[in-house]
Length: 145
Ligand SMILES: [Zn+2]
Image (cartoon, rainbow, N blue to C red; front, side, top):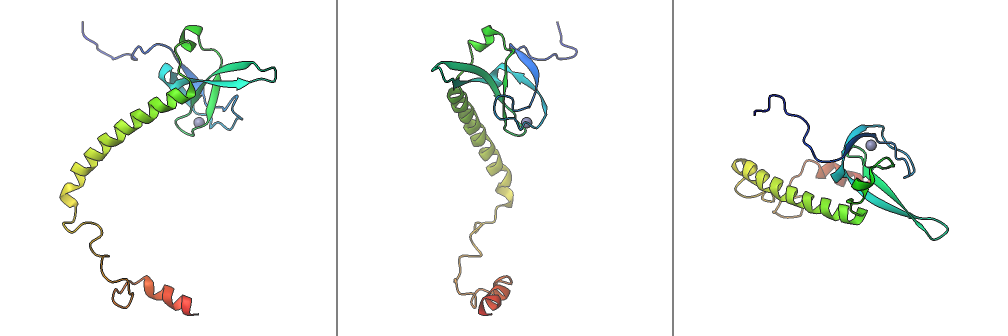
């Protein structure tokens, strides 16, 4: 069999959700997002009776506002991490990405890197008389007034 038109990858539950900030003070940007199970985490809110209510929450990639959604199947809910676990997981993923990007940038910028390094021209004397910076003179004159 061959795929002629690739379908959406089957990653379990997913749903189109609007970024409203519901349950988190509002202020969502109104973006419509395809929220998938890895985007979701659990948040807890204590009520006055000492009980704890659980919410399924996602964070908008556009504006960062959190929105609670309530129509998530229990089978999905049961597998969701707490917010702290989710953030840890995301931070680790971001760190892995950052390392990857750093390596790529270093390789890409290598041919244009000046041989004496970026601090080369400014490592002279700090005295503005010895180091004629065109921006330094007007500033000095202004300070004299
Ligand atoms: Zn948003």
